Length: 223
Ligand SMILES: N[C@@H](CCC(=O)N[C@@H](CS)C(=O)NCC(=O)O)C(=O)O
Image (cartoon, rainbow, N blue to C red):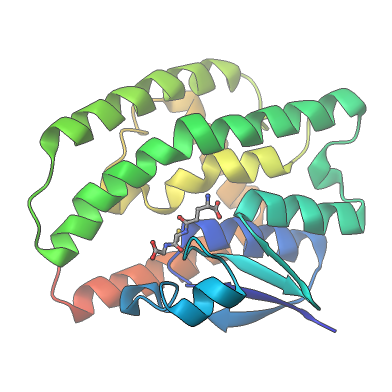
């Protein structure tokens, strides 16, 4: 039975899964959850798929799994994919960057996205102090990433891993939410190379951009 993935095409978290699945040659049946209509916040969604009301969610038969990183590890383990890393040490380093990026990296970009994009759509006042705080955290983390990526094409070893997809995720909304990533040349070069070298990463970027741009235009929002 084909596994199902629930999510909104405008979501950078869904993109991490759809990209990894494409690269591994895994077919996923897409089930659209319109986040702009609050479809992940219904009682039914929370009861059946994710009590936190968040996407993406994978359904494999009677097995339900949320959190994009956990889904990617589940899929990659099924396929024994090199996206996990190919040595024991590399696999541990991949996990190191995946855990780090969830807690210390993407979380601050989500804060800025919610402030600059979410609040603009909802016509709510922005918290400039919170934006400045999150930008400070992003710059501090990006400085470390920039040094790590000097002379390297990938986060771990010499091939693409799930660590690259997790760390690259904020680029999905970087332009719209104006994350200060352009200040870090090695980070930008690494991400440009991902876009050039992995058609799946470029295809899913186009999908996110199309969904977001179409939605923002439909509600008359210019960022
Ligand atoms: N840490 C989670 C983040 C999930 C998340 O924040 N998903 C967003 C879309 S990118 C969502 O479903 N939001 C729906 C809502 O807040 O109602 C993951 O990596 O899967």
